[in-house]
Length: 132
Image (cartoon, rainbow, N blue to C red):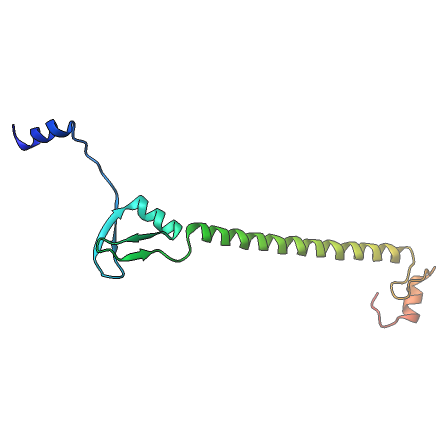
């Protein structure tokens, strides 16, 4: 019995496993090593900590993907709030302008608030600096 046959006999059917690995260089002792890519992604996305093969304690820092998404969401929320506020202000200005136009069309002076049968004549004599 050769070595492969003996291994098959001891362990049963051999299974080939394939992993995508990510190479890292330790920031403490500068030893290169590799860890599974999915584990690397988990560490990066959670600011996780780990140890290099020489025992150096390391931790990923900085913004996680969740932090970036939260910041983008907050920015979009702020932009939306500003847009809504601007729209409300414009609608308010429009309503005031419509009300003033309606009052003027009924003969109400926009300056002194009184009703005049001949508003244009009143404006020309009493409020000549106001453009009409």
